[in-house]
Image (tube, rainbow, N blue to C red):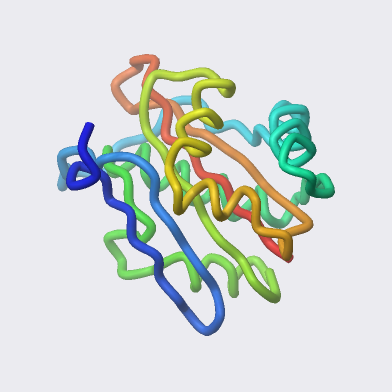
Amino acid sequence: MSEKNFYLSRRNFLGLTAAAVLPLSACQTAMKTPGKVVGASAAANSNVQAIRSANGLAGLSADPMLERAALQQAAYMANAGRMAHTTSWGRGFASRVRDNEIHGLAAENIAMGHMDMDQLFARWMASPPHRRNMLDRQFTRFGLAYAESTNGGAERYWALVLAS
């Protein structure tokens, strides 16, 4: 897949950084109820620690506030049937960060697809902007969540929030 097929933009919102990871899916106008919505920070802890350690960095702590922000975004994307940092109501990453009382530098990686956690982190590490987020020395905490597709399929919408 070429770089042009990736939505790889870096956004600054009042000192907050966000990055997307994979191609956008087709936009659907009707909102649906997502399948299962799961906070996955505890399950991802070994992946996150291994990635950071392999790159000479201190680990990250799973954080419930960051996981809550990730849960919100994963559920929104599953409802909408598309990947996006901004909801159809115009609420973006910066709003979620503020609403969840997350202070300081923060970043978001999102993904969509039928993949397990190892594949998810491999994709993020293969993408320079998302790798940069994962390996940012300033980040000390993370929250990860996914929501299953509304159509009952195995597709998942993932959101990772990192913060200092």
